[in-house]
Image (cartoon, rainbow, N blue to C red; front, top):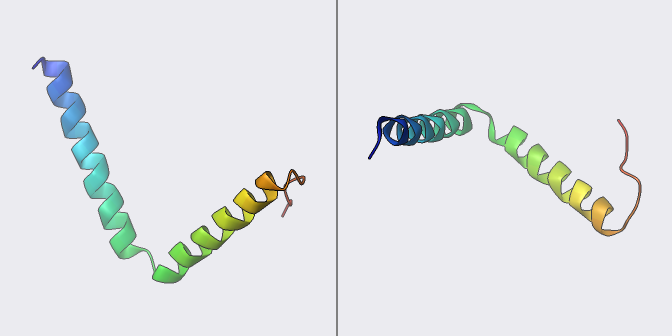
Length: 54
């Protein structure tokens, strides 16, 4: 295992920890909104409609 590989795996683990902390800190309503918007955007893409602009 090279030093670069070791640094890369450490960075990935740290990214995962940071993401988990972010999800724990963010209110669940924000996640619900994210899921809603991603579903809306996916539906628009699959229907070949121009994306809604906000």
